[in-house]
Length: 115
Length: 114
Image (tube, rainbow over all chains, first blue to last red):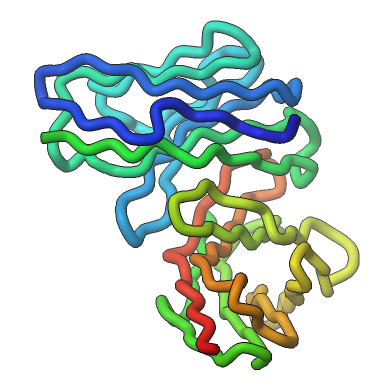
């Protein structure tokens, strides 16, 4: 199994809603990532978890709250989002090893629209 | 700090023609360089990477890239384009002492004409 599975594929939410994005992998990877990709732009790193601990937070607003409940799952909790948060949210995973050994496996993303 | 610049946000080639996608990097330390491909409504897939060793790197789907330190370049090539190569291509860099900290270029959309 070399897949990273993200659900839902599409999500429409209002600015007062609370929703969660989910990501799952069964490759034994101990590093997991959230990226945000605006239309026609490159992905931008949001969060990195290593061994289920948050290791990198790229100054992301607190309305985005990541969670890594176990080594296979990664969630992104959303609350009070703004329309400019509409984007494709990509999850990725990789081994934790020597620099250069890493290979990121990406999910297909959740296309989020905030109304 | 590391960065990559992709020259040309759109490249159009005819089927069977040479594909050349340009990437130049800026890095204060020896970089690790990557090319990723993104098909519509999909995540990113690694095509190839350069870490150390041989400067000509072969990847999947017939793509290859050459690391040229003197030119700070890592251009992606394929001898003969196929319709299925139409996608968005991202060059990325990470410092060799910081693991998976990828910084992506702006992307190049490759269009293949029949």
